[in-house]
Length: 260
Image 1 (cartoon, one colour):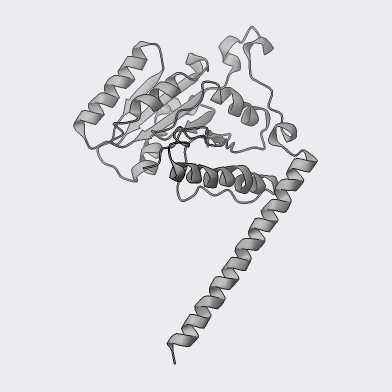
Image 2 (cartoon, rainbow, N blue to C red):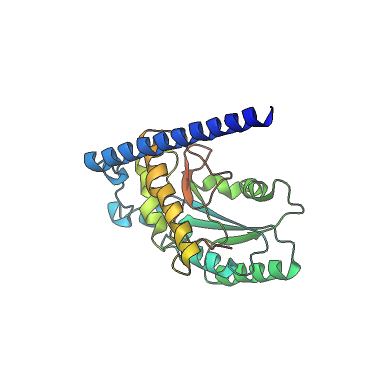
């Protein structure tokens, strides 16, 4: 006598959730179609002219804002070289770019490998620092917070966080920072993800399709209606935003993501 009513209640709840999910998808479809038809693309709604030295030759590289890039790591043996190399290869004036590698690795060998990689790029003239902590308090968020405590960070206008498996394109900052630089009302800029192994198998292809919908539809709809921005359970990487002192921060999301 108890099980049957509970089952009926469970079925009713499932039906209600299905209807709500359908209505959400329908709402998103209507909004995204409206965005396309009305031409409310970000590049049309906001000023995003490239930042270049030609705007004021006397300023030179000083025409570019100082950008802090943080790369939190934890035993990233397979990908640390890719991410560090990609960030150090960003086409941004070297004197206006600060790279922090925040290594919380517990494997001494991996820590030494990451440190040596940072030194290698530092010898090439990249402003890169390798930082470790005595403990892992706060885990990834704690590492990011610890990196922000250094005095030189206050000179940075914008901040970008890349996960250890991200491989941003060289022009990533040139395509994202202008949205923040020219539009004081914008606090965060999100790009989409690309995946290096999307065609590896059916599973990776299905994952790519799911995440493409998330970025292309869900996030664009949320942006268009000024809805709440969710971080999917954590502060995601690849987003540019202004530094909290006076402006906003960006995270770049044009990256590579591996299926484990």
